[in-house]
Each structure stands twice: as structure tokens, then as C-alpha cells.
Image 1 (cartoon, one colour):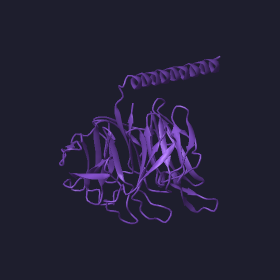
Image 2 (cartoon, helix red, strand yellow):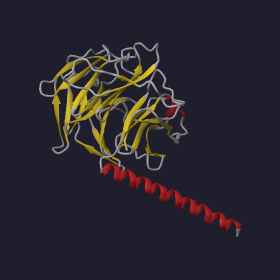
Image 3 (tube, helix red, strand yellow):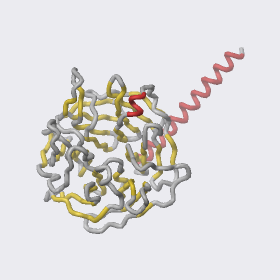
Image 4 (cartoon, helix red, strand yellow):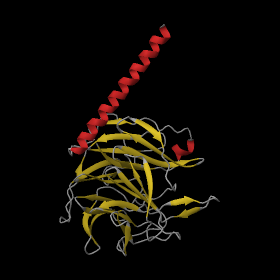
Length: 339
């Protein structure tokens, strides 16, 4: 009788949790439909720590649950992160190969998979709504040799499915991706000969076709082979870039294929050739996280509303952090989720 009662109580608690999760999912859906979503910054700062989610002003934060991998290789190797809808997609390497984990905000829980059609790392990616695109990257062949790819696939967070689309003109690794004026752009990177690419490409989903953009990064300082992928972000349909070697902010003129200088960025992005710095869009603002020029090596957070017509931008330094949150000098992963 006692065991039966405990079983009923356990079943009742499970139903309560399921009902709560359904309620949370409904609230998120309604907020999305009414345009009431707010940006949340998700950062990962190293192998020991978990991912942390901050509110848009960094006043509050919470730690996400630990990723359910028992493979030490996953925790101590490089990982790549992107948010798609209300999911956080993390791709890394276990001993047996490349693995995908997803965190679902509604359930506050991690799940394994689904796996990519062509598992890869060091790709260019970007998300728009509930869809994310993953272009190029490095795949391991049957002999364990790295192969630079031109293939592209997209992920739908509603269906949790991957779909192959037409490949790019160029095979590329260490590139960056963004959505700009309705198209998916892939910029820079290196080819199969490890040569830096100054060209970009844009994908029109309606036509399922790619357009090559020659010399898109022709004026940028490229350092071989340690340069990070281009640090880019889109705000109000304008594409911005952090020129890491000079710590400069630039904006792209899509009509002339020219980058305009907008002054110095207050972080030392050149210290590690662009690695370890977060440069993301947050609605109508740009987010920059990195080691400050004047902060004695301390990691600082800056937010501002960029203007493509103003040559010297006004940066807002966030001085009041939420209690218990500390950022290291090197940011491994950063993305922005709207929920």
C-alpha cells in the first residue's frame, strides 16, 4: 500500500512538472508572437565552468545545468555555440567524434543530438528565428584526415531536424556567418590550402543559390595562421566588424563593398589575434566583452547603439555586475538568445 502511494505521488509530481513546462512553453510562444522577447547573453568561460545566462543589462544571471557528457575530451576541447529560437546548440568533439548537444530553455535541460548530416567543426554559422545555417568547416575523412568543406546544412529548432542545402562556391574553414537583409552571409576564413579568403558569399533561401562577393575583406589585416574568424555583428540591417589587429570598429557599405572606420573599440582584441573576445548584436545594440585597454587586464562589458554615420562611437561600460558572476580574461563562447 505504501509503495503504491509513493508511486502515485511520484506520478503526480511528474505531471506537475510537465504542466509547468507546457505553461512555460506557451508563455514563450506568446511572447515571441507579440514581439515581447528580450535578449539574454549566454557565455562559456572554460572547461571547468558551465554556461551562464545573463539578462540584457547583466543585472541577473543563472548557471545552466552541466552538459550530460561523460567524455573528458568534450569538456577540455574547443566547442562552438549558437542559439536557435529558445535552444542553445553546442557542438564539440568526444573521443568517438563530433557531437551535438542542445539546451532547451523551456525544459531547463540538455539533450544529446540530433547529429548533423555531415558532422563538422570550425564552420561559419548564423541563426534567424528558429532556423540556423552551418556552412563549410572541417570534416574528418575515413582515414582521420581533415577535409575543408563547401557543403551547407540548416537546423530547424521546431522540428529538430537537419537539412542539406546547396553548397558554397568556396570551401572554407574558420569563417563567420550572419543574416543581413534577408540573406545568409559567410565571410572570410581559410581555404583547403590554409590561405586566407578575402571573399564572402551570400545565400538567397528563396532561390536556393549563392552569390560570390569578391574582395569583401580586401582592406583587412590578415595574420597567418593565428587569426580568429572575423568578428561580425548585424544591428538595424547594418553589418559591423571588429578589426582585431587595430582594435577598430567598421561598418560595411553593401552597395560599394567598402568598410568605413568608426573609431577604436575599448577592448584589446589584438592581444590574442581576436580570440577570447565576444562581439555580438543585442537587438539595437552591440555587445563587446573583452580585456579593457585601461582596466589593468580586467574583463569588461560594453554596450552601445551604433550609428553607421558617426565616426566616433559612444561606448557604455557596465560597471555594476550581478553578484556571484565573474568573467575571465578569455571568453570561449558567447551567443545571444531572444526569449
